[in-house]
Structure formats: C-alpha cells, structure tokens
Image (cartoon, rainbow, N blue to C red; front, side, top):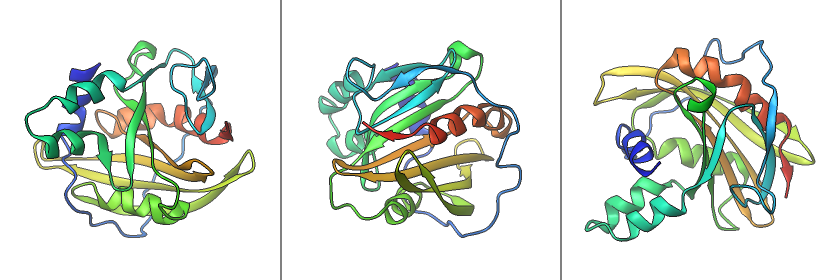
Length: 205
C-alpha cells in the first residue's frame, strides 16, 4: 500500500495552483455504484469524523503504515508533503483495484478552525501543481453542507492532463476532504459513481 500511495502522490508534488471557476465537461456519470459497506465509523477500516458508503469491491485502508514510513524518512519536509495537501492530511484511502479500476478515493482531515468548506477545498486544490478548469459547487448531504470541485490536473512527469474531483465538509472535529484521482480521465470517469455514492451518503460520524 505504501509504495502505491507514494508513487501516486509523487506524480503530483504539491507546489502551486492555477484553478479557476470554469466548467469541466463530462463531470457527472449516469451509472450508479452499488454500496459495498460503510467507512468512517467505529470498527471500520478508517475512523473518521464522517461516515459514507464505499462502492462494492473497493477496499478501505488507513494510512497509519505510510505515516510511520514517512516519519522515519531522512527528509522530513518531503515526508510531510506526501501526506499533507493544503490544510488537511491524508488519513485513509479506498482502493478501486479490487473492483477492476486503477485509482483511489482518498480521505484527508484537518484541525478545527481551518476555515469553511469552500476555503478548505480551494486551499486543497491550490496546493496541487498545475490545476485548472475548476468548477466549484455546493451540495448538502446528511445534514452537512459542503463544496465540491471538478478540475483538470496536468502532470509534469507524464506530460498529460486528467480529470480529478474532490469535496470538502466541515465537522466539529475539523474539515474532511474526499479526493478522487485515477490513472487517466477514462479511469476517473469510470470511478465517478463511487465518488457520487460517497457524497450522497456522507453523514457526521
């Protein structure tokens, strides 16, 4: 898990952002994902300030092991950058590979007082290199009001652009960000129903 996460994060070192409120076409998918369980509550793979359904076949795992690896890395700044993006730190990832896709739904949390959902989400996107064509919109789910963004990320390493999505909510325990990446835009589109399932079933823990 650690190697996969390190590889995924290293392809997009967080430096700056060029996000604007411009529509990303094809952000929604008509297919609906079937629930395979719930993550976030006591006894689940990741204890979070929120709970939400994960798509059938997706596997959730806390990133405690990677955090331990990062804490022993010779370059503390690099280690922290692998886990932190903007005001939040990676705590859980839900792997799509067991369901036949290549990508992760990653969950990051922050400290109380980090700002409202919009501020947190914009800071999250601003911490990622080479982003643009961002479309922000509000949503409500389970008594929570949050902000969602669909945008395009361009990799310097690969020289390619791909769609990504993220959402943020703020709880009494602090902000929570869910981020959906993917190998490319086609994989992202295939995994969007899992992201929508998580958004629609989001509840305070």
